[in-house]
Image 1 (cartoon, rainbow, N blue to C red):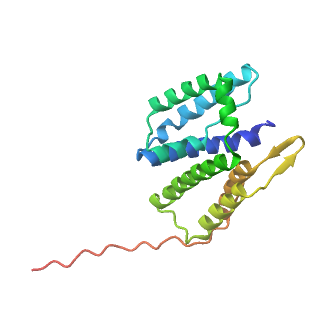
Image 2 (cartoon, rainbow, N blue to C red; image 1 turned 45 degrees about the horizontal axis):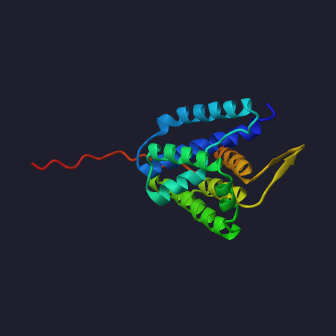
Image 3 (tube, helix red, strand yellow; image 1 turned 135 degrees about the vertical axis):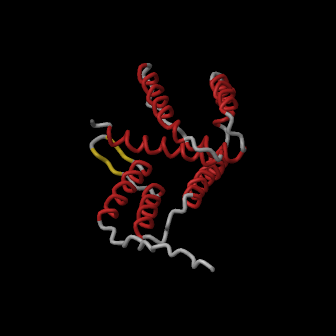
Length: 197
């Protein structure tokens, strides 16, 4: 129960990543969300059984997909095994450690920018009405809380921007739904065209 506040944002992040990949490859892959969540859970269980930390999906991979226009899972399997093999070499580790922080920061900024653009594209293609205060507050507050350096400490646990942004988005959306006073659009009866005699 004490890990529930951590798990919920990870679920939201994982679902968001599946939707982002679907948007990127222009296919509806929502039906694969359950498989993605199950794989994430199994990977966390395997990692935990060996004393490792929990696993999660990484938005950086979606940024790489967007930058390279390669969305083949086979390519990512090859990349994963290559990274594992290279990780066993101290020389490769030393080369990566020698990369200046500014270069890594620049690459990370570009990747997160690409991820953000995918999110905006999802809003546009799904015709989200940003003239509605409900949508404005939900997107705006969640975005700022996730990006800004907000943190919440409860005991020994610290919750960062992504966790707080996810929670803020969910809370604001449901609170705004409670107070939503926008009238439903009036239905107009269709008048048949006059018949010419």
